[in-house]
Length: 190
Image (cartoon, rainbow, N blue to C red; front, side, top):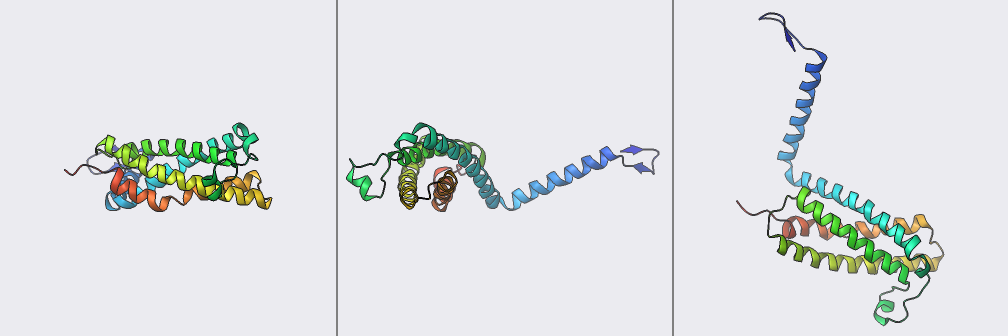
């Protein structure tokens, strides 16, 4: 912005661009302040999406490289796993390990970035671990069960298996957001 004399102000392109940036930034700040809970869910979803990419990559690597030879090895020595519909070791190991890595990354990102939690970190970690054990148990069962169905139906292409993994990873959002937001990653009351 240039001022030629006391009455005339000329806006340069730089001044107008800076003013637009400030307006955009101010609008974002207003939105975040007005809709804090929606903003937390958006950040939680973004964290979930980014850690899901990590989890999918780890799953793919484990499923098709590390445990490829175990994808047809049945779990016959454990009646509980057989009863739950988990029939192949490769699927079970891949789901379990990738879920652990994904949830560990999500814990750190959600605690530090999404909720900016300051509650007792030991208690938060214990509560999160309990939730994760239940969620991984569900994911391992559900994923292995669906993986077994897909394998037995003859539709076990890479695309279908990864799509199934994505579905299995998405279902727990029904309970993980409320638990993370209201139980695990709390802020101390001022």
